[in-house]
Amino acid sequence: MPQQDRAHATREAILRAAAEEFDRLGYERTSLKGVLGHSGLTKGAFYFHFASKEALAAALVSGQDDLWARMREDWDGRALDPLRRLVGMFHEAAERMAADVTLRAGVRLAADREVGYPGLPSAHLEWEKIIEAYLVDARDAGNLRDGADPAALARTLCAATLGARFISSATTRCADFPARTREILRYVLSSVISDDWLLAGPEVL
Amino acid sequence: MPQQDRAHATREAILRAAAEEFDRLGYERTSLKGVLGHSGLTKGAFYFHFASKEALAAALVSGQDDLWARMREDWDGRALDPLRRLVGMFHEAAERMAADVTLRAGVRLAADREVGYPGLPSAHLEWEKIIEAYLVDARDAGNLRDGADPAALARTLCAATLGARFISSATTRCADFPARTREILRYVLSSVISDDWLLAGPEVL
Image (tube, rainbow over all chains, first blue to last red; front, side, top):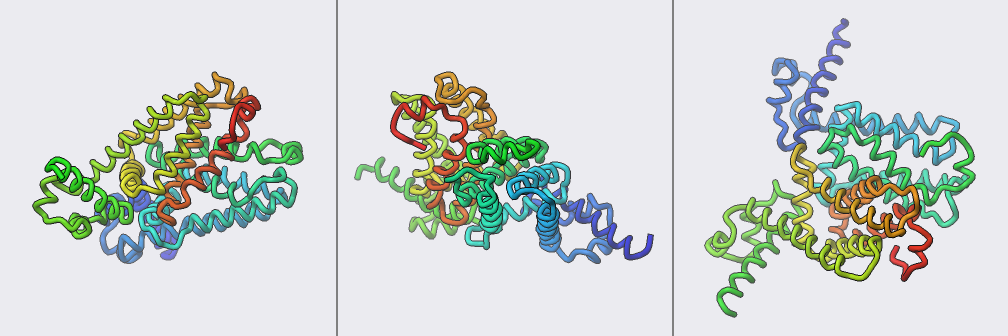
């Protein structure tokens, strides 16, 4: 393996070992020593890649930010109506959370920090705005019934998936997060989707 | 004031000072020193009532448990159908959270512990079962449409209010929690309530 690939593989192995610890224990109770033990690396190799626990956490948080951005780009490139794109993204996000400890750790670190430290810039409120924009497009495209409130719907969907992620993470390491997400989407959206949307294609709710 | 009343008042003042700190900072970053400073008490008076930070947190957590139990008893004694009782309880809980820092701190401490430490007995899963029982009664009483799934509805309502509480607590100290709770109830329940229920009495959604 060329040196650059080896360095990349080592970095990924460290992030994976750190993710296992952060996902299980959260930020405060994770120790660099524990991560080092699980990574099977020397201190020298480790510190070549990451200076501190904070740097590890920052890399995992920024990794999930990047993933969600790529996921949105991918779905926005598909020839689907706004509501089908939104529902598809929620499902994909939930499946990825269940399957990928690195992603799960990044999401947990970001959320723990946000809900634990009042006054921080809120990524959650930004997500509410992003989801609201999809729902405004969905309303304008006739996917939603008249009277549906995109902002209230966005707050409800984001709150429900935030809460479900917390509880699913603590009880099943997100194994049941896809099923919980499916029922949330079904119950929150059932009363607002238009008949046209239901008839337009394969069922996604 | 008789001595017993004074002791009770001092204990309440300490809990209130501790709640202000726990609500803002969470368990880890709250210090006994900070609580003592805000309570305006001597160490002696303080330690007469609480042996440790953990004892303070335990008192706040158990205080909210007691309050919810009383609130349920109160609503269960009213001559209302199961769904109106359930909706009424959600609204009252949200209003109380916005108004009462002692309650808010107890709820935050309980939830932070539960979502932060996988494997703990889950109060949240117990709440899902309690809410599900109300929804089973509601279904049997004809408050819900055929096909509504009480367990899935309970999981969705509990997840949504858990998530909304986290985000509302971090961003507005729960000032917007009642409004967020109202829209959650409306969107989650709209597709499952029966026409009979809507016609049966004053609008509560």
